[in-house]
Image (cartoon, rainbow, N blue to C red; front, side, top):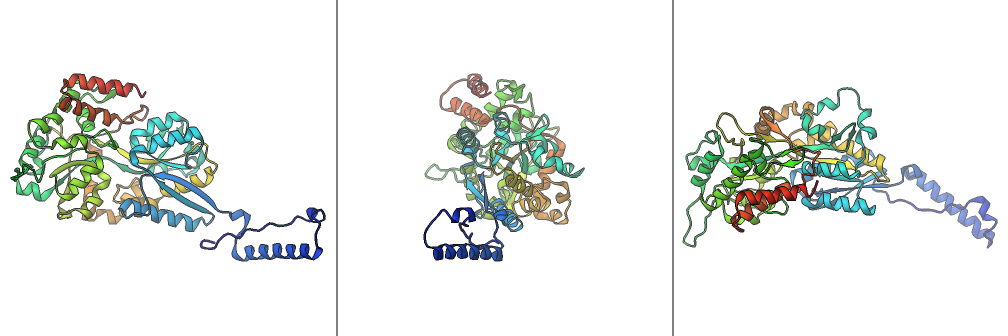
Amino acid sequence: MTGVPAVRFNAIRPEKAGRQGGDPAMKSASVQASLLSLGLCAALGVSAAHAQTTVTMWSFLDPAKTSGREVALRQMIENFEKANPGVKVRVEPQIFSELMTKFLAANNTGTAPDLILVNTENMGAFAKSGAGADLNALFIDKWPRGQQEDFFVRAGWDAGLVGSKRYAVPLFHATTSIFYRKDLFAAAGIDPKSIRTWDQLADAAKKLTGAKDAGGRVDVWGFGTPLSTERTGGTTAFSAMMFAGEGMWKDCKPLYGSPTGLRSLQWHTDLIAKAGAMPRETIANHVDDIVDQFTAGRYAMAVMPFARFENVRSQAKWDGQQLAILPWPNWTADKAGPQQVQGWYAGIWSKSRRTAEAAKFLEHMINPESVRLWSEVGGQVPTRFSVWQQPQFRDAKFAFMETVVDAWKAWSFQIPTECTTTQFDADLNRAVQRVLVGGIAPAAAMQEAERAFLGRQ
């Protein structure tokens, strides 16, 4: 039973009683005490078969906190523990950008957690490491026919599949989006639908950038994107820019020096150095910095994780109902740019001593009820089509999800999971810094980024 402390006792085996010596009366009392303990345990429902097992999970989400996804995770754990009174789930929160590095180190020392959250950029490293258990063998192959098809974003569902083995399953799909404020667009006379190209976005960013005050400070900047080399988490405009051209990689070899790659780098540096529509300090800003500053009202547009939408809307220092998502621009105006399929996945440590319990909890985290929690409470696009079809998701407050789903249908891409893409965005951000601060040519900066990527393969 939950809420009842475990009762510990040592039963005296009859064959040992004759060898222990001492007062027979004391022996009798000890045996009676043991029998009483056994009776108490039986009365309380405690047995060896229900001994407490604790499954440990490393996650960037902390169920003790109050963001939508963290509340959803807490509810899932409570639901699971109620249905499985012999199992407890302990979440050990980690910094999201350090999760995989720490996990791989812990795998080498035999101290890794039972469950690990993995983002798309680290999927290749996770699969290559041999540290992940095959989830097909553990539970997916036992599903009834058709259940896998319920996961309708197929590229996302198969991201953890290598050959016949599946090392991770999606908890929620994610993407990187351009958040914008409808009120500031309206005040500047800008129709969001008019922004079809990157040049048009740059022009809009200039119009949206406020004038400097007497102290030389700009209150509102037109555009912001994380350009730090730390805590980037794949949140970058480079991906959408480059996949609209030659792409970013071919057979795990980077194409950063392609015409589109160089044009993408130039766009970033020009927006800062020439257009004055993005502050120079963004080269030191990571994802959380940009989210915090946009929420505080410092940007009219900003590149951020789609998963932060509900948090920003609820915590904004301005009217959160003015928050919206802009479709990605393209280099030409004929169609919108591509929308990346990203996400957070979960896998099981291959050396876990609690594989069965970990598998049971992981399967619980992707069942229809949990998917509903990830979506309705956590603000994530449902991974299951059966959940997406539920009537509550036709409500206007979920319209922002439709923007992303429609974009995925029109033109989507995913970073190749067979490559080790960890820190690829940090390499590209460093290229921006090398041009702006180091003064080197864009082509040379991209060559440095290519060498850094190849060094991780």
